[in-house]
Length: 107
Image (cartoon, rainbow, N blue to C red; front, side, top):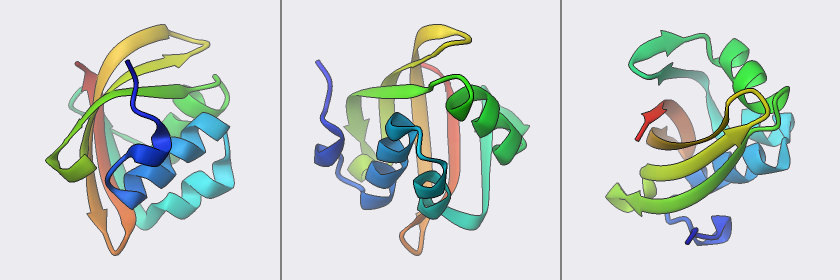
């Protein structure tokens, strides 16, 4: 069972997931704070390089299974054309209505 994107509690996270699923680079950038950072499986990554590879050029898609912490923590079935589908955890820090940081990794 998945949670529809429009039912995600945190507006910034909702915008992030909607942009990923629409493969909309502009909406994705708009969801991020100017100096946003991220990590993948505990390793700091270059956000622009990682998102291009793991989301936009590989058809990334998020099916949200659960949300906690007011919508700042998600469990997601994530899939892309490179890795197939995997169960992942996503934790977000929101500042000023934008995603300032996200951390993802296998759930």
